[in-house]
Length: 179
Figure: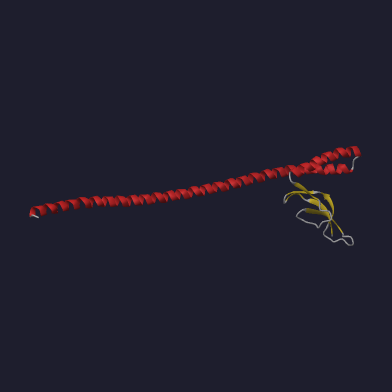
């Protein structure tokens, strides 16, 4: 190769290097910036997704609490109304004990429909005669000494029937207990 060719080749190589080096540096910097921006965007997306999932879970919990509170309020309202009609049933039972035969049939029909209403609402009577006194279901209004052979702490007589729905007592039975 001649000197002139060698000089031209050296100039060409220097030009190529000069052109490649500055071009590669901005590409590398752009790649780094793009990667950093991608990581930042992914982190932000993960944060938004986490916030969204937490908000969705909080809303679901709120909805369940609200449903539970509404249901409880509805059942409490029903219990209040039923508590107000229980004395009607008590009076019907008292009237049944003091009436003639024709009136008895009419009162029995009304009393059957009253008991059917209580059954439909899931309300059970608490009538603990000859059972052990349970303060969770009964209210002792009187006591009498236990007779021979009778254990103390048993219900001798029920003055006013109690009522419950499931495990919740609507009205405690008023009873006489042996002591």
